[in-house]
Image (cartoon, rainbow, N blue to C red; front, side, top):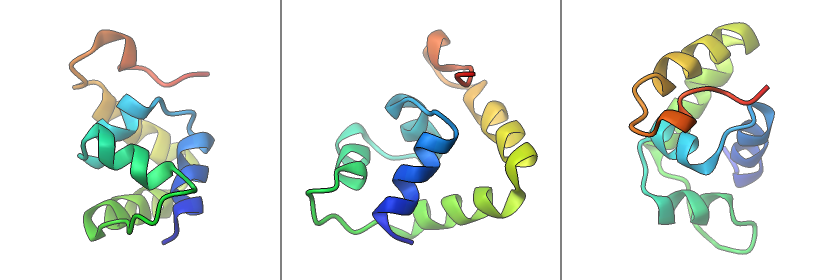
Length: 83
């Protein structure tokens, strides 16, 4: 898995950085380092496995799974996907 794959995933599902932090279980500085094209940050195995699992599901199941995870987001405005 490369950075571009993760960036494309976040753009594909139109995730806010706070939503992606919640899905992948990482902190803010980590998600910024992973999505910044200038940094030399290696994506850890937990994020890679989560990404591969969601990508394996297909679009419909992946969106349903992401919505299910985001229902437990602490901030109300980040509980739904953008359309």
